[in-house]
Length: 313
Image 1: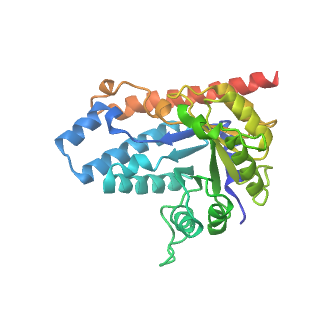
Image 2: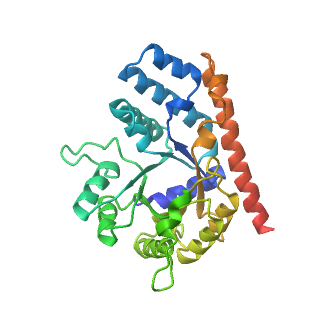
Image 3: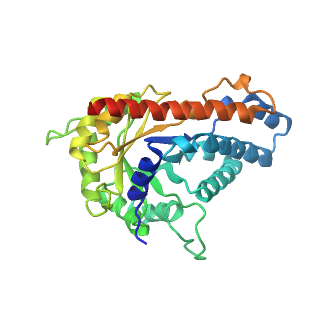
């Protein structure tokens, strides 16, 4: 049955009355001390994999009620080598078993034949050789549009149901070095990218009225978010920078659209680590972490609901 990612995203947002995407960015340095000690006592690949997966499961279970979906960042698994990739594999499997939406934050792209390989790896339903179900498959993927349309088409062709989020205005402080440059036609680079993504999305519209191609817009830039919403009215916005990077909830409002379903706040550190690592130093770390993470995710969900409600008054 034809059921594109964007329709499932909107349905889940309405079901859970949420606009929160929870990042899954494991960083051992800020893990509960109990887990850090476990690794110090048994510094093996197998134990590292288990600890990464253990903590991810705790985050997922604690925040699922408040989350529209989850966003594993590939780099945080790649840095730990094979153990990290095994933990990512198991995390994707667990999320799929729970029926959660998965946005893989990998920012892939390249020339068309390489883009096709990336798309097959992360969005393809089947293994390209054996035809077996692809256990790495995500529901959506962040991509770089720098190569233009022929770097985008392979992602659309490999799996038309999958969602794509094209980098437009990123949340980091130096993003303006290129993204804010003014082009000859009067648009800035980020604005041109939003226009391109909007055009690509015209052939990938969901029944919900939004396109299956969205854009990444940092919540650290509310004014640009409002401008990009004008230029890409049907694109869902994935908005990192909420929480640890000081992102503004007003940016989510500015990008949410008339129906308030267009913008999704991505929070990683703010939801994953709302505790002092030393405070979780015993075997009861899971219960303590669950309480703190659940509270942080719920508070972010409520804060966004309140600020969106104030917009309609």
